[in-house]
Image (cartoon, rainbow, N blue to C red):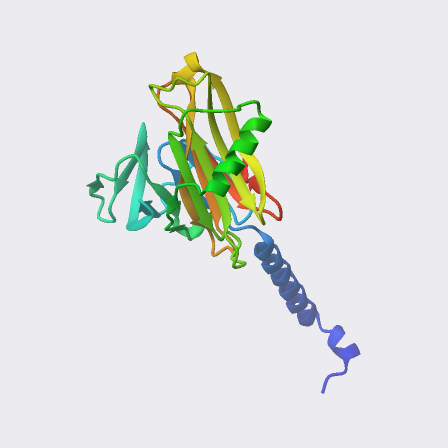
Length: 259
């Protein structure tokens, strides 16, 4: 058997040692690189995402050589190729154009996108009291009726306890209230906070946005799901915006980074 001192004198040993060391370093670097994928939310937003964040990405920079998993109404409708020509166009794997429409969620294969099914309901008396509390804190003492009255209950962090998202608005074409409002409230561990609140005068009816739940998504087999919230408008007065919320210990945080 070779003694260690004799082995160290052999040039070939050092060549092999350097190559193995170099290979290990490269593997370590690659293992630390965060895996990325593309996420498309209708024709409104496009992102480059990893497990922890998403970054706004122009449509023209999306790699359309990738195949995309596409969801409509929270249902997986298949794998498609995409091309951006004024809006996203969909083609099956035989390059036949498909009429998917404008309301979709799509993710490149590397994103491992899953869109979860969910239901909403109307507020209970206790939740209506919670809404009134937050409105009064913002100097809205009364309103005639709610045009939007919606509650999502969902366990985002998989700990066996549901969080709540409450969406409410008194806005419609015939609203006679002096103050118009749209509000989104989160309830985590029985503690509530306002995610969004916008207040308008009665004559600003057509400038008021509407919030709705675009979807609940999971990427890259993450341990928790994300809430996708869409801020839209009834007219062209504003630009629609999507928010992607991650549940932290005490609140929801938007994980979208502007480019």
